Length: 191
Image (cartoon, rainbow, N blue to C red):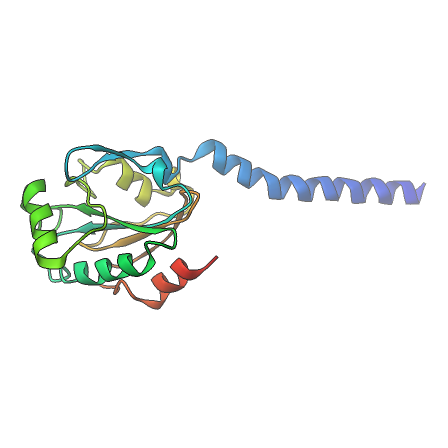
C-alpha cells in the first residue's frame, strides 16, 4: 500500500513538472504577439510586413538626423554589412520624440542617411516611439503585457531592441551603446 501511494505521488509530481514547463510556452504563444505580427510603412511609403523576417535576428533602432548619436549610423551600417548574410538585419525607425532631432520628411531622412552614411539597411517611415502617438510596434517593444518579456522606455534616439528569429523580444541596449558592443555582437553570433 505504501509503495502504491509513493508511485502515485511520483506520477503526480511528474505530471505537475511537465505541465509547469509546458504551460509558459503555450501561454506565450497564445497570449502575446510577436514582432512578426506587425506591418509598418517603409521610408518609401510601401507596407513592410515584418513576418518576412522570420528566421532572422533583428536590431530595431529609433534614429534621428540631428542628434549627438547620429554618427552611430556609420557603425550600424558597418554592422549590417558584416552580418547581413548571417540571418541578421537592422531596421531603422526615424522618430522626432527627443528635442525635435528628426524634423525632416521621409524623403529628406532617406537622402540624409544615404548621402552622409551610405545606409543600405531598411529604413521605415517616421513614427513616434513614445507618448500618446506611440506606434503599435513600439508599444509592443516597451510593454511586458504585450511582449511577455519586459517593460522598458525609449530613453533617447538610437536605443536598440534585439528581436530573435522567432519574433520574440530578446533584449534592449541603451542609446549610447555602440553598435559593435560585446552585448550586441555576442547576441548576433549566438546560435
